[in-house]
Amino acid sequence: MADTRTLRWLPWIVAAALVALLAWTATGPWRAIEGIRQAVKTENASALARHVDFPALRASLKPQIQDRLVRAAGVDAQSGPFAAFGLSVASGLAGGLVDAMVTPVGLGALMEGRKVWNRVGGIPPPTRSDTSAQPEPIADPRLRFESFSRATATVTMDDGSELELVLTRTGLRWRLAEMRLPPPADPPR
Image 1 (cartoon, rainbow, N blue to C red):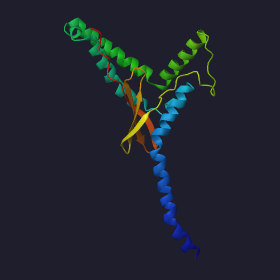
Image 2: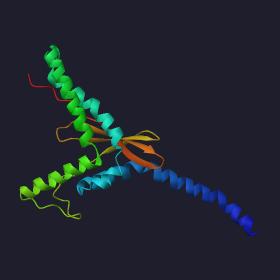
Image 3: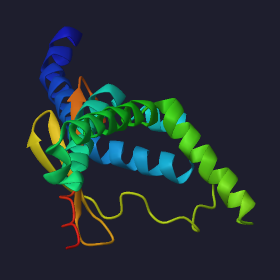
Image 4: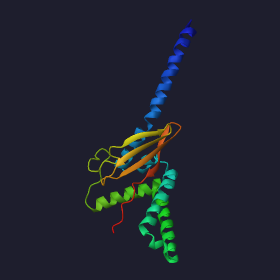
């Protein structure tokens, strides 16, 4: 008789577990953005590393940075052999810079450098609980699902341009995997 009662509740238990799993997965992008936001506010590179897929992020940023360099150089810079060589060297350096900076160690160094710079300027470092002096990272993101495993968070920058953060899901974990930089400003004429 106990087996019949257990079997009667089994579908409800399975349904509740599936709803909980779906809810956990669906709220993943918001939890990842909040994790990134808190890690940046507290300048915790190891916490940030849990929410960022660094190889994918580097792969998304390199071509965008290199494209901006080529556009900034203009058509005249690509016309001569020495100019083209200089542009290819600059593109390679930009790619190397992205490789070096978009790592947990690189971000930690940037964060530590900012701490040192603030100390030199007389700004006391914020405590883990007092982050009110810092601007809000990823302020007011607009989240949108592109698919069951991909979501974007669009953030409006100070100049009105929009930065898109692309989060991807692997299993139950959501991580920042791509950044779509705002279009470059038109060069002055």
